[in-house]
Length: 284
Length: 284
Image (cartoon, rainbow over all chains, first blue to last red; front, side, top):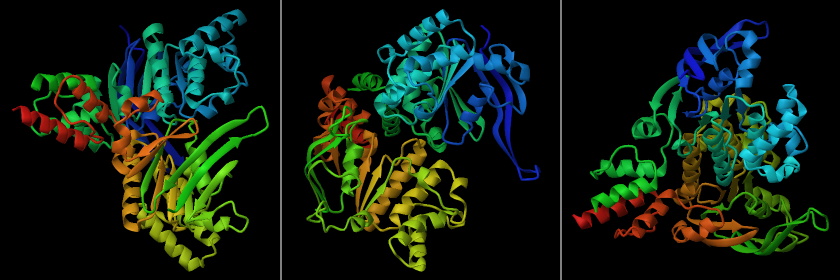
């Protein structure tokens, strides 16, 4: 099957200029990044602040244009200006701050804003809004004012807003970073539901490792480069390397790793407490 | 006892349609020189509660005592209270405003009425304590990374040499390494100066690692308090109010439940490792 997102040797440079327009400094935010996402996958990108993961997201959404390399989103070349609108339609984005991506005074209207802007007929909009709110579990709040909602609920409204535009892919750029644990779980669950039930491809950007244990594939970024790839299990089995990259592994994985180091016979990359309980049972 | 809450109740917007009881008959003490964590999910009243500690909010009913004095007495010096009880708000880096890092940190001590020289000396000390480097002192705060900005904001409060320092979710939005750096820095400062720290946090793992004692808030009331070990021993009750325990605590309970002869009560990876090794060795 063809990839929905395909990047090869992608480079992006932030160019700083002084007041006269002379180039002062060039910062390479993406350094020859290769990325492949298949339709229907849930792919996670991990990395600490400043590792280039948000820059990558903005390239995929055509908010930024790559400096070098190739990037195809749903078959369209993102380097060509005429494709900008198609690319944005294919890859919707949910940002970090719940308070600056909601614009309407009623939840339902906010979700309708995207499709309305795209010129979708009214009866179709009504259908889409209902489906989108249902999918993120916010139907009961359709007549609410967004300022009466919690952070997690606002993010789910934002996701519904993106979904109503029917993109092939949703990019969540640290959409849980400003939420409390309950809100984080709600948002993650909503995205997994969209992925499983509607087949929407998800590109999930985060620095919380415990949120990506259910992802299909994980990319780890550092200084603009992809430094690790694999399934969550493959990636999390490399505890030392992750810690070198200033990322921490989930507590259970860390515990299993420490036990193994002390001579307990355990497999690599244990992710959940259920797995660890099973493994320890065999040893007792 | 530096701070005592005596049956404190606080109602937002009383006598209107938006009336909301944020604190409901709250009584507890902050002990001299302790590292106290306040947990509870969003809306549980924890931020409202800490804002009573230095008189930013005034209780609708009940009393708050600072070193035995009722802070609502007419002749009580509120300004002095606010110097002795320092507060670091959520996202404190949004409050940086001066042209240089050093000037920003000097603002508090100068406002306290200190001489420029003394204020600068304090700013130096505070910035070094938060791990900032001297060559960064004359940069604009806006040239710094998110984690660095937050250190500067915390230094701004430390420079006033408060005997109690309250931090409202000081690690929100930081990556794992940035989070550990800030908490390690706080712990070190706490051990060095012996001042009292009140930390509002969502992370049970962090509370288990750093705090001497914790207070759990739920629906505007104190749900329970005690050492992290005492509180996390009641993981099921915590989960009933939507809070978790560190994943290793839950793991130990699971192990026990599945018939293994293991000591429960571990709250850190280190303790869990020791308990599991002990169990395995016993069986060898």
